[in-house]
Length: 468
Image 1 (tube, rainbow, N blue to C red):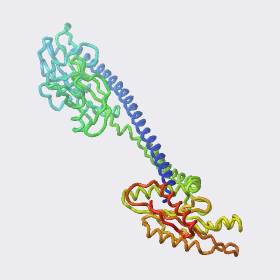
Image 2: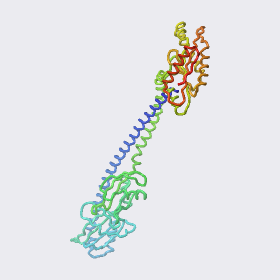
Image 3: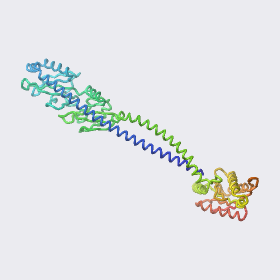
Image 4: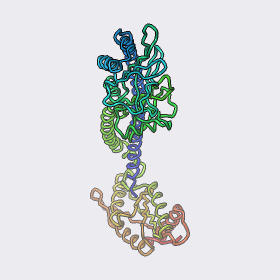
């Protein structure tokens, strides 16, 4: 029986405990970093939303002022009076290009279309209904300009006075790819604008994201969103999102969504995590060496004291008891036989009295060496105390046990040289063989072997065999 297995168990348990503690700390750090990153992203999104809102309001003010300037232009009023549509459209086109507008519309008070130009658009959107682009003074106006939600404008509408109101002038900036690209470059975030179609589903109007991500975003957006932070997967990548309603007159027909990939937010933390993971790995290696050193310097000596006889180096009674229990379990489960030999030195007391304890110690050490040489390496030899020894013979039946007993007797009969003196100890052996069949308590076999040993000592037979 390898008593050193206890040392390995202790070392293994300590190393596993250290690993678990380090892993628990590391994963706690990962969760903390993720929470910090998400919190930082939410702050970034809120800040960006404030910037975007202020920018849109500033554009609204500039657009309203520019539209009011054109509406007050004497030439436009005169041209409206004459009804010269080409001239009106020319004036709208020139003014629109100066202010960067994408749409210019003049309507009569009753809603009749007088003139319309799209100076900033490559082509006119289908089903463009400029009658939807009617606003009161003040506020921010961004609205879908067709029933399918395929186009939208930030616009301003002011009356044309001649001197009474005679028409309505509307100028607008398109909410398109150029619009979201400008906003994205301003805040460094992903920007998307979605509109609600006839069926009530969200569809992408313009976005800086790719096509698959846009599809995921349209499905992720709630049916009735308010300004809120969302979390979700956009084509397999985790994003934090902030939805902002753009339309004031039609509820939530238009939504602007700011998006940040969590991977980008986590990148600085991941670099730190890699460094910490490397430090933890180095720490675990050093800890393993430290545990091994502690086991070798502290635990191993204590383990040896608990399981080995200090004089002979043989296993003690504790090890023998454990070995007997294992042998009995093997016999019950796999029918493996075993035997126990109890050995008592015949003339040890006389040797001690005649030559002293040093001679007795020497004799015990020599006896231990001879016992080791007489049995197999798989057998257990233990010192029971005083001049008594025990030998557990694994996989051994009665005939084999008796042969071993004879071998031991011959080895003990040889004299021991001590400072020129010849010491003769001899020995008596009790042989107990574990029977087949019923379980046998280990202590019971030791009692039987003890009785047989004393019978051999009284009868001077060398050894006596008994069966349970």
